[in-house]
Image (cartoon, rainbow, N blue to C red; front, side, top):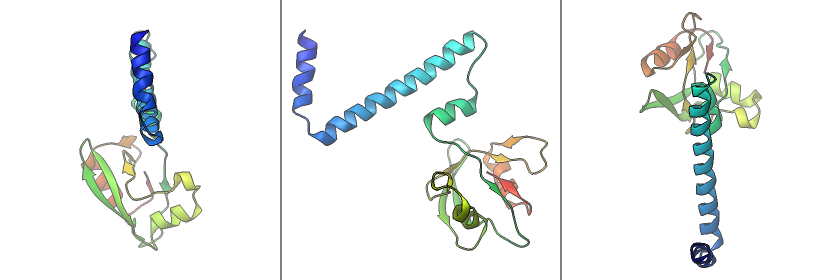
Length: 147
């Protein structure tokens, strides 16, 4: 088959790093395609994936319950980014986030570059807050927080 032979020739000329990049890009494309296909097909049958399910398929999402001690600050720098998401820019020693990181499993620690996609409503009335404005106000409140 001419197409397959041509592909083999092109792959044989690539170094290992390029082959790994092609394999990774192909795998990501397949996973994204399967996720979208599953969402479309399941939605037609009435069992569509939730936004949280799709997010957890594409990137790990976990909850961070933070307990504020009297006068304690959150202890992380954030910048807003498109689509109502905050990006963690730094962790300040001696505050809530550092305390969380010291006791959390390595895969659940907050790092620079992590994204905050929702904050639990401190009053519990609205569930998860997903707009930048609402998340910012919740993070500035004086009580406990769940990212």
